[in-house]
Length: 312
Length: 281
Image 1 (cartoon, each protein chain N blue to C red):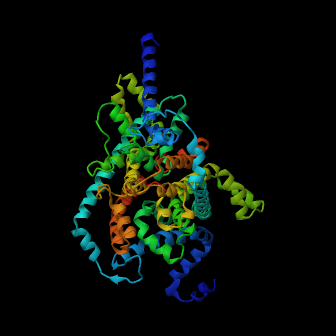
Image 2: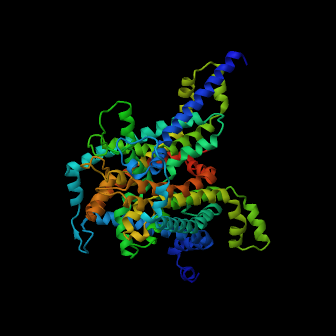
Image 3: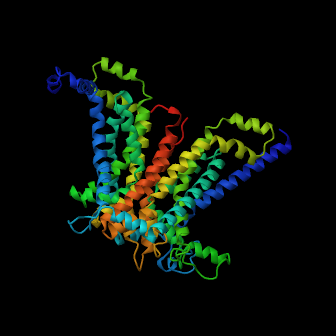
């Protein structure tokens, strides 16, 4: 109040004054969002700035001495072979993972849509892989794929498809597939639940009309279900892309990025370089590159989400 | 309906349930592997090739696990971390969401969209910066080192979930209470929050699960093994040379039992929470 009065006779500051009165009138509204805003600024905003700053320094985690190196980290990263290998490995991880989750999710949702007895039971059961710790799913898949004692090898041997046990996670050529399977399993329930909700909002009359026209089931799926589900699929795959891109726990628990870094993605490399090797500056530079990817995803997401001028 | 039509729809039903059960079977296989392995005696679990059905089932692993591992400690820590995160998140999210739902003010849109963007910022790309901040504030090796970042990354969901729900509650209810002389705080706790129950349950469940399930923060900010949660405990059992699979899988089964109970009772709320934001009516 007193600050506002101080400025009452200076016309230059009338905008400032009006701003203050506005703030006062809405003080309660601002006070209530302030804790959340400040908390997020401190816990997310500040680390973001700190990451940018660190990326310009040589900063070993075990000492307090930081040396300014400018853009050297970025220059070295762009010049290194490992960077392009990481991009390729991250790309195949995301594309195969998201495709697998989408297809499995659609399959489940389409079959759960109708008048199913015990749908609640099915829905709950399909939900479980999504809701348990990634580290637990990861060790279970490690166990399934165990070269000597695993169930997968036991089944393949029984079927006569192989003659001796194969070690999937130890093989640089196929280890990433062994991890991606676990990730698809974990990510499928989210897709199934979202698609199911989307399917249930499609007007039933569309199908009835198509049935009268004698449309086959595949055609119904192709010409009614898919187009009607388009926006839901778009948002769900976008979210899934982000989550798959940043997936850490599963890879870290199953392989730690090995063998010979073939299952490492960009975020795994951030952790290895920044925290495991204690090269905070280089890890921060990789993080900034990660930000760039997320920034692009976020822009697309916000575009899709707020499309059509929906009010917030 | 003709006979042929009836037959065809019957056949379709059989096929539908057949596919559903097959899909369910595929999704449940990992659980079968985990659970059936824990029922094998030690010499059978380490026999190659694996037996697909335990030949001599025993619950011995479930008796040994309490003394041979720290599973009780890990579950206790998981509860501390999850409940702490829920408390902190709700304390921040409820006032913020309520304020946005009831007032129009400059910066509201910016605030809500910024909160949404936080959700895009996955913890792992922020972990190097967070590590610096957590050590600067002297939080390393405290529960808060895990609770604070977990709360930050569950806040977006909570704020949006509650904001959307608060908007559906008629203002008239609050106004009549105000005329009766109720304070702002009383109105929130006595009138608004009870009506918000479905959204609150979805929020709490989501936040609880998030904090229960994540490994990253505990892995990075808690090196003191007395503070390990379930995921970190399981991770610590993965040996470089040797892994006690029997105990590790038993801990895993025990670690997901609280979650299965949660799912059985709160499935509808969880689904409502998952679909909010992705599916618009």
